[in-house]
Length: 235
Length: 302
Image 1 (cartoon, chains in turn yellow, green):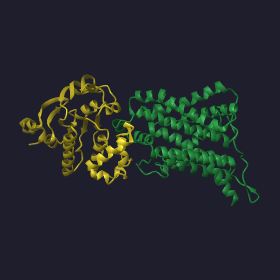
Image 2 (cartoon, rainbow over the protein chains, first blue to last red; image 1 turned 60 degrees about the vertical axis):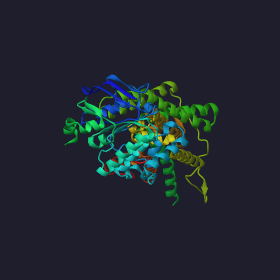
Image 3 (tube, rainbow over the protein chains, first blue to last red; image 1 turned 120 degrees about the vertical axis):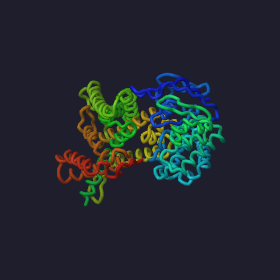
């Protein structure tokens, strides 16, 4: 399980997270919602080693994940898909996927993983030899998630997979995230601006406001909470 | 007819050496966004290493690989101990661009000073392994000699190896990914710091080869202040700019273009205009085609 205790993160003189504590059980899909600047992205970047924590602790099972580099955390089953359509446009779709499994130094396993990802997202399979910048927004997001699946992660950190996508595509992406969580027993931290969509597929929800936790609970309860509805769901 | 063909052959040979130097510069620029003036010093120092091996063993075919290894080691050393800490410590964007350039200029000076100290007034001699007498075609000696063929062959083999490494191997994929998108690469598990050092090492080996070939194609000897090496560094940069600074293919096209143009100018207008012309080409390319003659606006190529 993921245990975050009293996490404080500073960006220079600005405090982005003011002592955040979160527990997420294994196999749960947790939606982290909140306005722009609430600290959602900072939270993910700190968990994956891109940002440094000022105080606090975070553990994944027995592993202390603060103060580790992202490239080492990948080797411990923690994979972060960063904000936006996080693919390398100059590389082909196949190369983008292979990149995710290079560290395993096992081309057989890598080929097997690629087959699994293509089964999951058949659209990628038709475009393996194309450059990633020829893909649509939704396909790029599939590729970004697919690349991180190549590492066979147990903990998946997703930063705004719905960003800039058409509503119908967002629904598809959210559905695949839910399916992945169920079929592979993944633990997922899903950071989302699209609060309603995220809470619909999530098990639990965490509402961040100005770097602190404003509300937390089961996703269903948060969806029905009048205060959360008014502030984040817009009705 | 013969005259023009000869000019072309001279230009292609010189240009292939500039291409190697341009590749050395482009590799460092792509992997760490550093404009590396120390590339000239690395080529120079490795050529001295090559000359020393050649003097003691008499074997060009031992001297070349040892010089390449020396160039790779020196280049990786510079990245690891000077540039990496400097880039980690520099605070804002303008520092990030400015400081490394000054640092590589400083390192170039240090390398030359150390070579002066070690070699004094002695010169490193790299005698050509093959004859530089041109082949005879219908009674006339042409500019193509066994030595020129060898130079072209070495450059060609290196370029094929580099292309295969970059396009077909896991190391190549890591090198390309790390240069295009370091953060995504780290999140994918690539040890970007290590890959950057390797990028510098390959650059050093390419620079060392350029240095050795420049010496055997020219005077056959090397000194710490050798004008040939200043030319090599400057022409390498011009070739890299012509090719759009991002692309290895561009570096080759740039080097050959520059070599041929300069050979034509040398043949028909005289040697005094060669240096001037190289800079004129540089300025024209920067003004008219800032992304290089094969570059795509805003695009990056493998």
